[in-house]
Image (cartoon, rainbow, N blue to C red; front, side, top):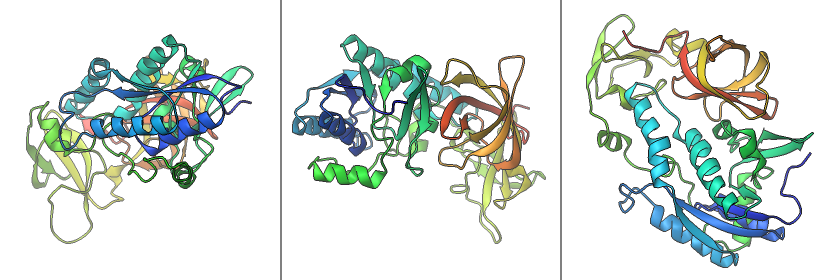
Length: 368
């Protein structure tokens, strides 16, 4: 097994200006490797406004590189990001689904554009600040969960292909977040106490509805119960996701209300009262756009499954369909399984891959 960088290597680190990538670079420098940094600038539409921190992040990344006595370059993948990630992001929202841009961003930008650039520059491998691990078993590169269960990011990396994993390392995989902060403080890195980013991948934290309105037309419509009772008006189906509680504007006594589904044909948002309403649960799903981390796809059978980040693995049976899709049948009903999100398979700590959720037996999104 191999969990870290081998011997002395030429390693290029993706520097985001955050504490995780800063400590990644620090650890590799401490390990005696030849380390360079790359800061990726992938959004240009409004990178000088209050919601986009690209300028400050780049300055922070350069400050860390200066302290660690390492070179750093700024590279621009804005065209590729807009074409490969953002166009898909808008397409999915327009179709009523809730995409996960971080998943696609990792596969298309960080571990494709960035990886290709680094390899052309002579790197042996790239390193990122993801909380995940990698092991080499009999020549195969396995993607594993990070040891910090609260920060494990293997879910967002499930679309990495074997050749991408072969040229990637994750130095933080064995650490917990408090340890990373402590290392940054001890090394006097300027990002040691910097707040973690939580916005859209490479776009930043901004008012989501206002942001979408710039690119997609709004189309208000009715909010109704499964029985057809009108509960109010929604501002546009794209602004809501399954399981959403806040922002519905439904008052009154009793339990809170939740989004349970969307009807695109009638432009109707389905809402139910109570977290445990039957309409909120699914016992199976179909997924498409399958992607696996090992050369051979997993056999049909029982696996742990995550349908959203940070949930506990849910036991499910995997079945392949004749049209290239797959079906997952859960042993226990799952709450708010959301089309557009990803279902990721695990065999213990090993992340095997997964696919994009297309439909569930609750038919939470329909056309007619």
